[in-house]
Image 1 (cartoon, one colour):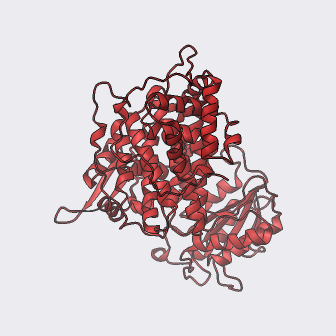
Image 2 (image 1 turned 60 degrees about the vertical axis):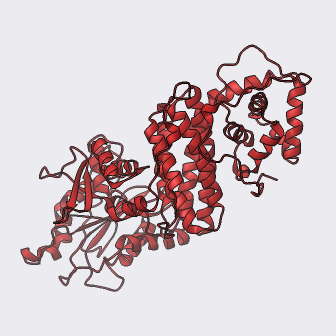
Image 3 (image 1 turned 30 degrees about the vertical axis):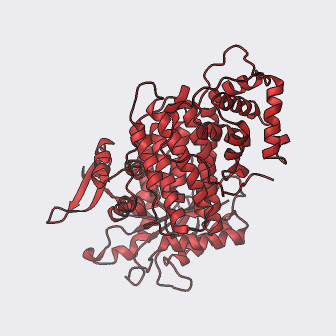
Length: 583
C-alpha cells in the first residue's frame, strides 16, 4: 500500500464538505465521518452526530477567515489534501488514519504540533482506503500559514509513514516530474466524459508535436494541426517569449479558455527548454526515405532506419558518458511518441501507454544540452514524415523489428537510471518496456508465424547445419535457444540470408556481437530481426509456399541483396564491441 497526498486549494468550504459527506458520484461514499480535527470538541461531525449539520461544520472551519476584513480574506482559502492507499494492502483503522492526518497537517505547516493558533482542519473518512484533509488557510491569529512546498513536504512525511506502518514504499521523486492533474481537473474530465484531463491531453499533444520537429516554426505548426488553441507571448520586437495552449471547448465559469503554459505541463516543455532541444540537435531529413517505384513502403523503411539508430542508443546507455546517455533518453522518448502516432490501430494503445510511461524516464537532473542526439531525433522525424504504417506485410514486419529493439532500449534505460539512483525514472522505463512487449507480441505474431512455418519446412540436415553454427556462436545457450518458439523463424531467416549470398555463420556472429541479448525475453526473436536488418532482408516472408527444401549438397543460387533495404548508415557492428549474451 502507498500513501499518496494530492494537495489543491479552492474557495468554497461548504461545497467540498457536501461532496465529502454526500453519496459520491456513484454512491461510493460509505459511512462518512471525522477521524481527526484541530479540536474535537469544536468540530461537529454530521456523519456520526444526528444533531450536527454541514452548515455548522462549515461555520466553525471558516470562522478565522470571516473574522478578517473582507479586503484581507484570501479568494482561495480552502486547502484540500486527499491521502489514499493502494489496493491490496490492509485497511488502516480510524486511529491510524487520525495519526496520518495529524502528521501531514504538521509537516505541511497547516497545524504544527504545539501551535494553538494554527489553522483549523478536519480529516474525513468515507471509504476504507483514503481520507480527505480539509483546512482553511487563515490561522487563529489572522496570519497565513507557512506552507511553501506543502505538497513536497507531505510526500516526504508519507515516505516516513509508509516505513513505520509497514506499507509499500513509493519511489522518491526528484522534482523533475510533470505536474499531476488536480482533483478538480479530474472531476471536470469525468463530468465531461473524458478519460484524461485537459492537462494530460495537452501534455501528450505538445510532446507529440515536438517529436522530431526540426524548428520552432514547425513545432507551432504541429500544435495548430493537432487542433489546439495556441497563444504566443510576444516581445515588442515581435520575438516569441513563451506560449500557452488550451483545448477547444475547455473553458472556465466565465467562458474563457483555460490556458496551460508549456512549463506547467512538464519542466522540459517550456519554450526555453524546447529551444535548447532544437538547437542542440536539429534532426536531418533522411534522403533515403524518398519514395521510389519498387521499393518497400515509406513507413517500413523509416522503421528499419530507426531500428539501427535505436540499437546505437542501447550501446550509448551502457557507456559512461552521462550527458550523451541523457540526450539519447530524450531521443528515445521522441521515437516512442512518433511510433504512437503512426502505428497500426491494433497496437496504438499499447504504444501510447509506453510513450506516456517513458516520458518520466526522459528527465532527470543529468543535463543533456551539449550532447548530440541528432540521429535518434532524425529517426523520429522519419517515422512521422513517412506516415501511418499498416499492420501487415513489410510494414508489419518492420514495426515488429523496431519494437523488438525498443524493448531492449527501455530495459537499458531502466538499468541506467537504477545505477544512478533515479527510482521513479527506472520504474517508468520498466513500465514502458512492459507495454512495448505487449505491442511487440501483437505486431510480430503474423510475420513470425510465417517464418516459423518456413523454418519447419527446411530439410533436417539444413536445420542441423544452422544449429551447429549457433552452437559455435553461443555454446552455452544453444540448447536453450533451440527450444525457444523463435528457433524455426531463426532457421528460416538464416536460409533466406544464405540464398541472398550471405555466409550464415558470419552474419550470425555479427548479430550476436550487438549488446543486450541478455535482457531479451526471446533471444531467437531478437536475432531474427537483427539478421534481417544487417543482412538487408525483407522484414516479412509473406505467405509460405509449398514445402521447399534447401539441399546441403546442392549449390544454392545466389540472389542479389534487395537494394530497397539498403540503409543510409553503417549497419555492421563495431569489430571491437564485446559480446554481451547470456551465460
